[in-house]
Image (tube, rainbow, N blue to C red; front, side):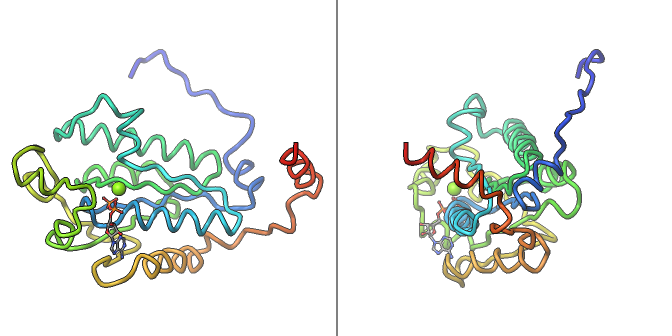
Amino acid sequence: MSNNLTWHDHRVTKSQRASQKFQTPCVLWFTGLSGAGKSTVANMVEQQLFQAGYHCFLLDGDNMRHGLNKDLSFSDADRVENIRRAGEVSKLFADSGLIVLSAFISPFRSDRRMVRQLFPEQEFVEVFIDAPLEVCEERDPKGLYVKARQGLIPNFTGIDSDYETPEKPEIHLRTDLHTPEQCMQQVMSYLAENGILKDIRPDQIPVTRKEAFVSNDQN
Ligand SMILES: Nc1ncnc2c1ncn2[C@@H]1O[C@H](COP(=O)(O)OP(=O)(O)O)[C@@H](O)[C@H]1O
Ligand SMILES: [Mg+2]
């Protein structure tokens, strides 16, 4: 990093942005093998939160590799950079007051630790989406395991690249034993029990703003 860079403080603070939204920002970091169910569960949680009035955003590894991270391969070094960028983007979104759902295989403990360290302790929630490799391979929703077994995809997590299981995730979901709906409910219960969902007071959203929004919507 250049020595000539200075951090510029913002006039509008993170806590002001969060209280404008009546919520406590956090990052739900979904990690697990390909096909374990990260995208499926993260989508359901996001939909549930959205319908309850929360402001949230899902960052999905596959989608980020189409844009911001499309210059990166699946080598160990590029995987580290992939997660570093994902962590930094998650932090920006959380700083904007959002509840962020980040779904990345993120196979290496050191990378997940690096991301965790970007956040205050309560704000980072590691969600281990756990299913045995055999189950993920059986599901193979994108046909990737078949290709990896044929040697067509080098460095495939679980096949010829490691997945280091989380040691102390805040939430551990066995997607081979529970339905997606049950997994989503477990995440929602964790958020409720840990004070992350306590602030929502839709009745307090200024009426004028609601009215302006509704009338804009009709135009
Ligand atoms: N409990 C569960 N949670 C999540 N996905 C499940 C579950 N049970 C079965 N599945 C299936 O497993 C697949 C998971 O795919 P996906 O969510 O794309 O995985 P990932 O994003 O981890 O690669 C989907 O086809 C989904 O329907
Ligand atoms: Mg996915």
